[in-house]
Length: 113
Image (spheres, rainbow, N blue to C red):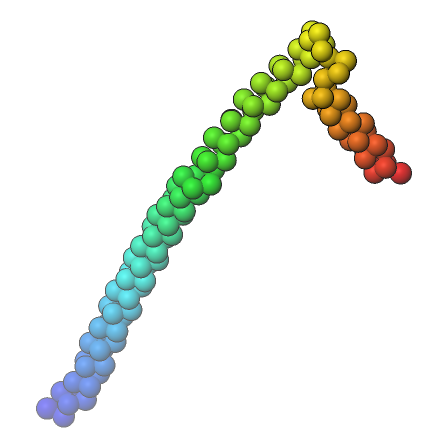
């Protein structure tokens, strides 16, 4: 009987230790599960931010660039037809373009020095 009283604390310690080991393993699994959930949430947030960026910034910029290209092409076509115009010698648009071209050339020359 005396031996039984000596064994009981050892058995209880062993059972408590086994429970601790089981709890530790379960805790690790919960932590890994939470990490996976957080990674998934981060990925979802990233996707949402990318979609909002595209919708609110990238797509409007693309449309604006497309419109600007169209306008520049129309302007380029009009400028190429200046020489065919009978009033090209006194054309205020052509003279303004020449002034701007001369100004740009002088500005580039001053930056080289």
